Image 1 (tube, one colour):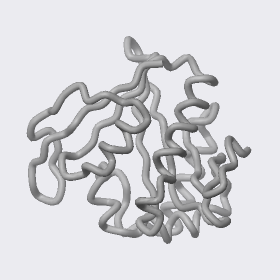
Image 2: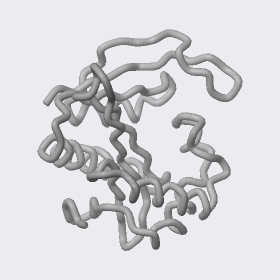
Image 3: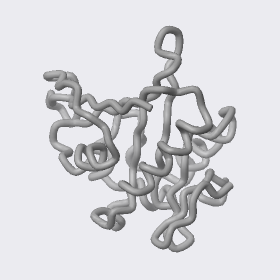
Image 4: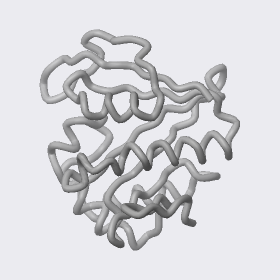
Length: 171
């Protein structure tokens, strides 16, 4: 299902045929360095297959494929909270390195958020960014997120502690 078709990208749901392209894009240590350790590295086609299977098993649309020139090159995903946080969701995003600095992620994230707020009962989004990723912080700020705090030494990545920057956006 296509969510939005822009001149430079398409935001849509994931399909099984996207796994090879996804694996090609995500098999990059620079990307892994900015993600939770749950993202495999190296990233294989089997990892892509597994991810797409998980996405397809969820009810509703919580993960969005970013397609450029017919190839799956990134993801925007929302993880809804539960219990007293059931109206909040964490957002995460990733884009193949060769597509950085083109404005694709900023626009795609804006559109995914619009769609997600319209189709779910979520009223608050949050994101957690590692201190050494100012480009990702700028993306969040451009789409309206506010930094609400810094959690010191909250991240352990590549054998080192880092601060985590916490952002939120209210509907």
